[in-house]
Length: 105
Image (cartoon, rainbow, N blue to C red; front, side, top):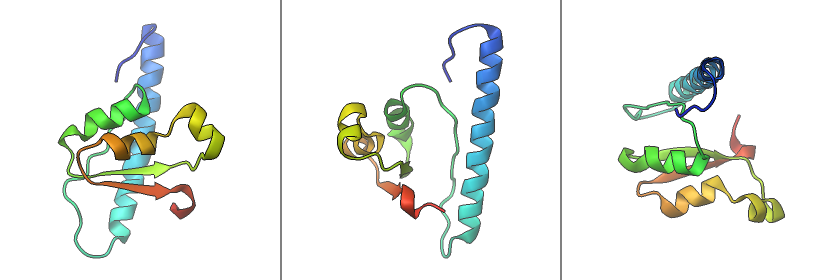
């Protein structure tokens, strides 16, 4: 991750990123435990900083597949902010699975 600011901010940002990474790791492990059939190996969970679409695209350069969630911001909000999932699906060079917010449990 790239950090700007004092060493105190750096430590706090690192701790927060690690907590998010651990929560994501637990969610992935739970999903894999519930999955039927073949399990992908390996599954990598990372916490990275920066603009979401840019960070995901950079990470996906060597990925076999990328799975992302969609918050479901639509219409005018999408025009103003842009859509990370839209950017990913249009620019990544590997298979992409987008899970809509209403389908996540």
